[in-house]
Amino acid sequence: MRKVLILIMALAAAVGVSAAESAASLLQRCASKLTSAPSVSASFSIRSSDGENIGGSIVMAREKFRISSPVMHIWYDGRTQWSALTSAREVNVSEPTAEELLASNPFAIITSYASLYNVRLLPAQKGSRLRRVEFTPRQTGADIRRAVLVIDPSTDWPVKATVVMASGASVDTTISNCRTGKKLAASTFVYKKGDLPGYELVDLR
Image 1 (cartoon, one colour):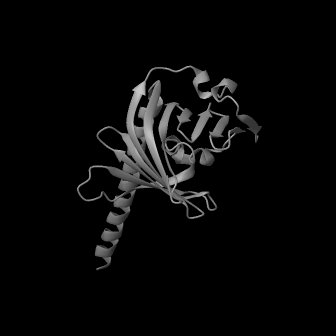
Image 2 (cartoon, helix red, strand yellow):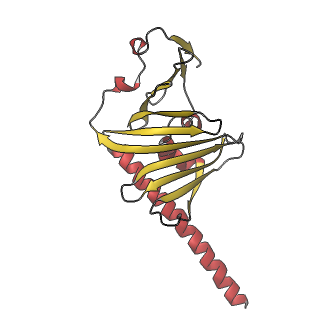
Image 3 (spheres, one colour):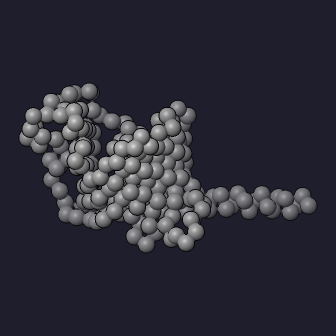
């Protein structure tokens, strides 16, 4: 009986290691697709637990990105972020942390997870080919309690991201129309005063 128990425990450990490797491998393929292309663009729809719904588009070039929607605009050049809410008519300038970037860019977790999160594959939902990867923070006190990224293994593109904050609030982001594009000028990801005439610039750095 003892040998049987040891064998079961060994198999369970092996399955756990295999799942972790599979999750990492899947994320690596997805990250490689994002970082190897000159640029990547996609459409998104965000639904938060407070009932807010936002739709828009994103264009990325490695760590840089630009987001456009009817209610907000974000530029990030790899260090500085300009965030604008149309209702406030102001542009906030900041230098966000890796975790703070996840609040604005659902793709950021794919390329920055290794140093911040443990990952594992969740069981596939019945009748679905999509793969789900769960992220849990390595350190206590993180702003994000849990995240789940859904990836289409036939394309290696993400199709959905769910983020649960430490406060209990959650955000669901649906991603569609992912496609690669040409190389973009660095200025694409830098806010210029003429982009939003009449907006006040607020430096939070």
